[in-house]
Length: 543
View 1 (cartoon, one colour):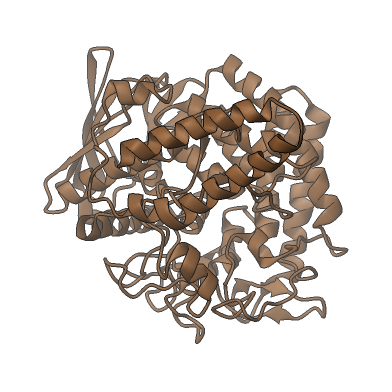
View 2 (cartoon, helix red, strand yellow):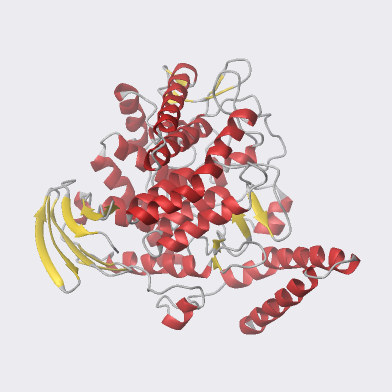
């Protein structure tokens, strides 16, 4: 049946492509009708069929299957030894890449680039999803990672990057401006000439998008406000609405700590891009803007009593609800050392954000905490951002501990339920208690009552956390380095990572502060011994 449906879809696309090349009323009617039927089919039917599979997609992807989407190498592979959890990590790691491949779309009528959908029900190019998806692709195929971002830029509306574009719909909104951050992270991994070429392609578009945000989303106080809760990506968060979104706050004049943090990251990235292009005056201007925005956030959004950053409404009153948005200024380097320490204490406390699967979307001590989407469950993308903040401030042990628990949680749920999900229960290795905007009948009809399955929109970032934070691999300007941050509970475990373009790392956690390993590339093997968060130069970073 699946094969028949794929053939039908391909034939229908060819027909529509032919029709679109013609003129007249027939094309004007059939084109939108097809796109509408196709969109609804995937939303209401195919997403449920595909998500109901039980391991039907092979985790080992044959070369001929990879070639259909222009891939030359198999994904990174992981084997873990020395623990009862070994197979949990290995299988979950492989499933993420299998779903990442399944969700990759070839160039088509929507985009001339390969592009990524977050999951079977989300048949479109989403802004912040793509920024995170590109990071997962970066360790498999960096050309795909670039195309995933280029598709977002291609589908812009004027200077505005759109929230989502599908074959059937466009959005009047934008979303968290993270493409510049993602693009710069990829550029650092590329050879110099390729990096400069990529930056030259994206910099003018992203620079114009920043100017658009300054005109359309910046308040008189210098901070940034969402035009609608959906722009934030965190939808039914208690700072915005009630659970089923039947009552929503007017956010157009509410300065948001997450939005302002994302803009700081964009300004930093644009400044770095300008530097790579030799545009020193523009680089300095972006750096100055970032610093001014940090100062405004510290002056207006910080609450000294609670030790958190809050939304600020039009009356100058803080919206006092502790959510993951209160922590994201760490990622952007906003707080000073003392404020950062207070945020970290809240992050690590079990009664707040230090849960079994860490970093829930709402503080567990809040009365409004519940296991409904952005009102309590763990979302890997925002958890990823907080962990990046911990690294930025030098809390490397804490970053390693939280990254390990997040990976163990996502992989552990996959071991129990055979699915990678959109969001997770902070207190359990199952999803039975999770809800999706309970009481909202439209969401129940279109997307179901719980988290979406086969979702690697950003849940795949657990693989990135394992590679970049736990093992500590990094490629920059042609060199690969290792900086392990495995926590004490990994003692005795050996992680063997085979990279997509070549190279094999074996790392054993001997003690909390001692790691032994080997690095093999081009037939040459070298051994090393290192300490926690100590950098080892592995040489050429071509892989």
